Image (cartoon, rainbow, N blue to C red; front, side, top):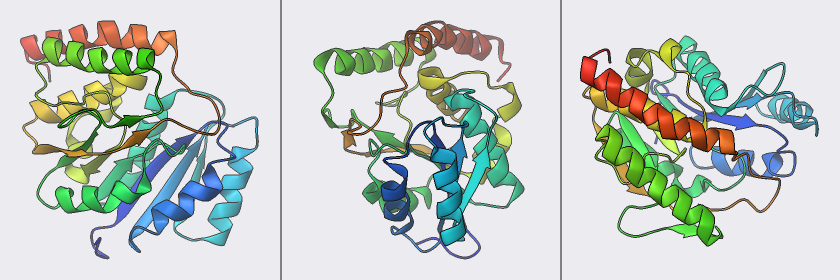
Amino acid sequence: MATEKERTLIVMPTYNERENLPVIVPRALGQDPGIEILIVDDNSPDGTGELADQLARADQRVHVLHRAGKQGLGTAYLAGFKWALARGYEYVFEMDSDFSHNPDHIPEFLEAAKRNDLVLGSRYLRGVTVVNWPMSRLLLSYFANKYSRIVTGLPFSDTTGGFKCYRRKVLEQINLDAIRSEGYSFQIETTFRAWRRGFRITEIKIIFTDRTEGTSKMSGKIIREAIWRVWALRLLRTIGRL
């Protein structure tokens, strides 16, 4: 359980998530009374931002950060991280708003975070725990993980997953202003920077279920960026700039 001193914030980016938001927010808050949520909305055309404001007015544990337009997942998380650091949260989560990340795993993350600095939710720890993905998407994810581990040297089973819990000292020390990645490569880079800094990192097994409402934000641009970005990380590792 989170104490008053060790406050927890879930950073939840949204873009056209009106169907999911009123269901996932109370589910996540219900996992622990010390949890708060920051919804980072990129001016969703479907009115997600207005709905988020309604949820915030109804519950003081819900906060909203509005952005002018669709600026990408990576920048949404970076904005959320900086918001969390400025307000003294000890545990900071990345979590999707579409139920692909099951809120019921949150207590497991918090328990593991007592002994570790970064907790990764893994879809490939002791088998594959992915539900409802087509085989093509599953193979893309699986081999993207394998590729990123080979190139960067990361010793984790799932480097591209977006269900994570950081202790604040990790976010304070990995130089958020230097991160330019989005999507897959954002997840790889944040973990890589924490690993190179020598932080204690562990994985817990999660069940990942593909969204049932809305549309996926995956794109060819995100995939192409991940392909080249891991080589940039390897270069940075080689020359010691991280």
